[in-house]
Length: 104
Image (cartoon, rainbow, N blue to C red; front, side):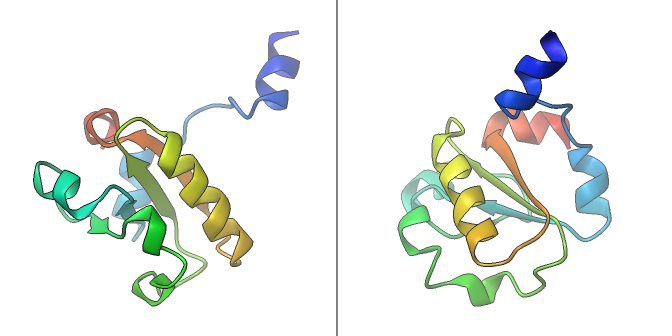
């Protein structure tokens, strides 16, 4: 029963974010520039959600892992869906950046 619930709501096992980054994955922080400047994951790219669609050239390889993050996980979920609609094949919602930082 729990497996069915997790499958329905996309709550499968978390990927190994650290491994994804070691293998060339990119972390995209979709918060505003001012939010990003107040703290962020070292090496992450700041592409605010409202400009993500027009800045896809900053994420060159559609086949490498892309991990989205924001403050809470809401904007990063939207970013994940947007990137997938543009053909990115390995996109992960990392949720809030502080939580993601602890997983890397």
